[in-house]
Length: 114
Image (cartoon, rainbow, N blue to C red):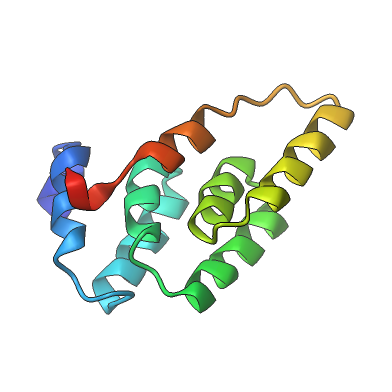
C-alpha cells in the first residue's frame, strides 16, 4: 500500500482498498495519512470503505478544521447531498470562491470499478 501511494497510482489504490475489510486498521491508518497530506483522491477512495460512524468522526474533524474539500467528500459518502448544498450556499454567502471539482470527483469515483 505504501508503494502505491508513493508511486501516485490512484486507480490501483482504489482497487487495492476494495479488497480490504470495511474500516479495517489499514483504512484508518491511510485515512490519517491522506488527511494529513491533503490527499483528497486517496482519502475519497478510503471513505467508500468506512463505516458510517467513522465517516461522521471524520466529518466532525473536517468541519472543525474548516476543510471544505474533505467535508464535501464525507458528505457525499454519507449521502447527505442537502447538507452539501447548505455548505455550498454558506460558502457563497461568505464570498468563498471554492471549486466543487472535488465534489464532482468524489461523486463519480467508484473505486471498486477501477
